[in-house]
Image (cartoon, rainbow, N blue to C red):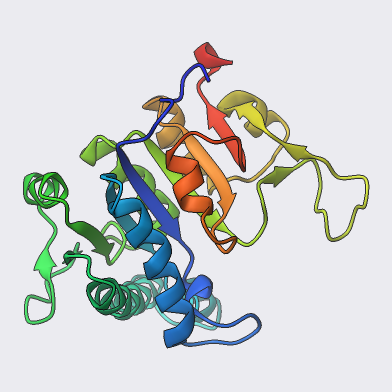
Amino acid sequence: MAGVPSRLHRVLLKLSGESLAKPGEHGVDPSVVAGIAEQVARVCRIGVQVAIVVGGGNLLRGAAFAKLGTNRSTADQMGMLATAINSLALQDALERAGIETRAMSAVEINEVMEPYIRRRAIRHLERGRVVILAAGTGNPYFTTDTAAALRATELGVDAVLKATKVDGVYTADPKLDPTAERIERTTFRDALERDLRVMDRTAFTLCMENDMPIMVFDMFETGNMERAVKGEPIGTWVVGDGHA
């Protein structure tokens, strides 16, 4: 597939906070986290280097607090701490699955995880450790989607794997429109023109400008992450215009 390596060697997995909870619930469900950890572990065991950015929406949404009057910077900092809780849960689950893991934070919470330093993160990846990147970019007003795009670019990954509970990007919401069709491949420009909303616009633009491929796939179909890194045709790829 032009523009996408036939096999991925280093990836950044973007997880929503909600993916750590049972459907329709909040918080962190240990059995759900264990299932995600096992999917990641399978990929690590075949030699793929994995970084992870996880959101915090299962615990709280800073934007929702801001709408109710909380200072936006404070609300976003609360959200950053929520991502740190989720990161620790993932770290524990991965280590129980036998995978060496390091959690790194964009804000200083040195008692519980390392500070994010790009060269150190790359060294961890090269040594086969999963690196979980907490606290977004460390700045308010930026989403964890943007953090994922930024870290993917900094760490030189082959692609961003955006985990969802659907099997890719559709022409319309498949829950509302029975005629909606899954898109196997599209370009950044086409996705913007069609308003496909793969990631938030800042994150998407950062990936587009740095020619960083994005795969949107169903993380909760057992084995899908492994299929994705092996180059099997699942999900939806978003690639640069020159690779259409």
